[in-house]
Image (cartoon, rainbow, N blue to C red):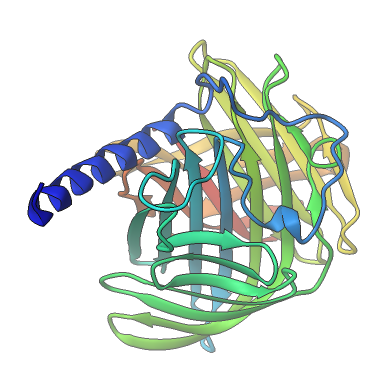
Length: 349
């Protein structure tokens, strides 16, 4: 076989495999035979658990940030690296069953910039090293020592960013000490966050560079079959309140019109209180025309046990991620019983 023919075959194989990656994110309730499953009571080990877990089918390193410039203009930033496995193991070279997908975005009050990268594992193009920590795909990199002092960079056709982050609080574990239940049938993931990053650096936009600073939130999650078979979409909220408290809440929606919710209330010192299904609620208030569909871009979110009853409004309603798996993701403003800023992700619309 000549070199050109071999290249064509490898290219087609890569495209096919990466297509499977996109499908895997759309089917998180699918079959996970042969893969590891989260177990209640597992004790996390660091720095190892900052790294990849190839025995699990899906995993992500998901960072969002609320930023301001010197004039007070608000921005949002996203950097996400996804890993998906065709088999529960890792092999070096082109026959690695580990697939990688990454999204980067910057949101302003009037624009939303998005880029996507894809890679095969095993060839050095993408991966995660636990100690010292480094997550990368091509020249997009999130790295630093023990999740404490980090650097972050990514770029797209119309934007780039180069940021420094410093943790101001501890890691936070969701659910039962990091075992995060996602359905009444008991489907679950391992889930922890670093919601206390200070972040600063340069956004490069079409009008030039902008110096910004603010707060960032990192989510770490891995599983093999986290959703129930009928669960198809979700709305996920991260909120940072004036005074220092934080709140994570999500609603998972199913094909019958039902939902499953969970939340974590986080004190300013990092003390976390998990809340089970039904304690947190999110009700759409306003819908916007976005990418040819109706998207709820204003919500009422409540957690009565903590006196939370807030309105969550998109900074830019047009923050649509036109990626392999399209979804809405963007910064939000929070008002009501608590004031602050945060991020909202919505899928299935």
